[in-house]
Image (cartoon, rainbow, N blue to C red):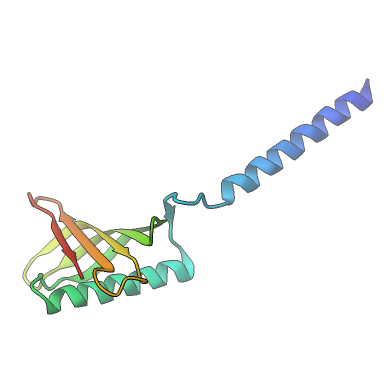
Length: 126
């Protein structure tokens, strides 16, 4: 009887270990919070994309305070930022989505900016 109890306990421990490891792995196509080097690279992408936007017909924004950065692999990379943007005269809380497809020579980057209090959404591709 003690052997059966021991085997049951061992089985439960193994199942919980497997479940814990599976929970730590990133799901392909799933959204994950970016940390460490991945977050740093995503913030560099945000700054570079906002600078590129300013050279065209888009507004000139600077990221002041980034509160959240998530990443997702979807036919390229989709990064979503919760960020405070400054256009020189006004600061706004915004959601910025940058979708990159680096293998495309044209139209490989798309940026969407939706700010609280604004009706529309900026949507540019280059």
